[in-house]
Image 1 (cartoon, rainbow, N blue to C red):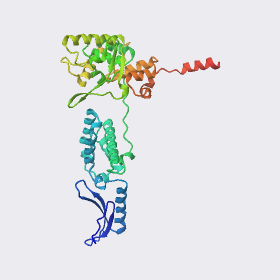
Image 2 (cartoon, helix red, strand yellow):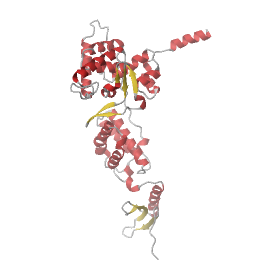
Image 3 (cartoon, rainbow, N blue to C red):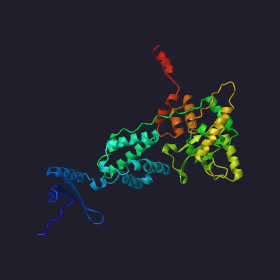
Image 4 (tube, helix red, strand yellow):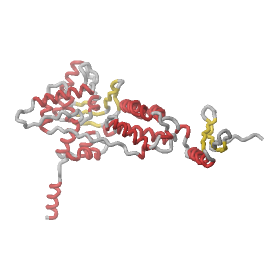
Length: 383
């Protein structure tokens, strides 16, 4: 009678004559090319081999793939990046690839998945910090590793995520820089005849993100209605400029501009008509190309210095801090609106926040204190 071959999940255990080791094996069926898949466990005693074999069989029952768990972490990261590339923007893909290449591969790239433990993850974060890697990059590395290992769990390459038990490194909050009312007025005055003036004026008055403004096209500008419509955002990558969808559905919005910003856009459009550049971005180079973010920052810093040089000598207006960023114009716009008592929901919609809770969390301290008014109301009611 022919001997029946073991089916998937069936195991055997025997003692090897050559060295007395106990050997247990479990069948995992067949690979795509028809070869039998088998995993072997060894032990000094039959009980030890049996225990290891039971672990392998349990792994088979829950859908685990023991061979896959032996792959190096670097290989997993490579496979994960290839499998999920379509889910990320070009910019995010570049950042994650850099983290994997520069920080993971040299340190833990050869570590096998089945050897990876929480202590290795903790050690990795500590080593990155010791090597002088900035806190934001260490946090990004932690996020990337967590997502990759969750993907491995989902695809049954490992049974649990070792990084889930490790607290992610915290990033110190960067203090936002707000321009006060006199500073903003001086900046707008200096921007009136500056090359970067229209961009700075619209940014300060709209609260739009830099990428949203740099990706703005003339067909999204309605000077009669005094509006700009955000439909896309410009992202700068190693391969060039990329137009992408807004961050969220709430980011798709129409923003009404104040009169002084509309005037700045009218002047810009007249220049674009003369140059035949109405198909170019609203804010563009002299040749009609997209603006490089580094050049925008450089022009903005020059405008800030120019503003500070021309401040009144009596010291009535404080100089704008050197650490101010272009993005701080968005913060300034939000803080002005909230400090004037504007509706939180309306400000959130103008900024493109998906939820007013986000606006409140970031800018809540800018809202006027109404506690005294509440006390007055109580006096009216109970007094």
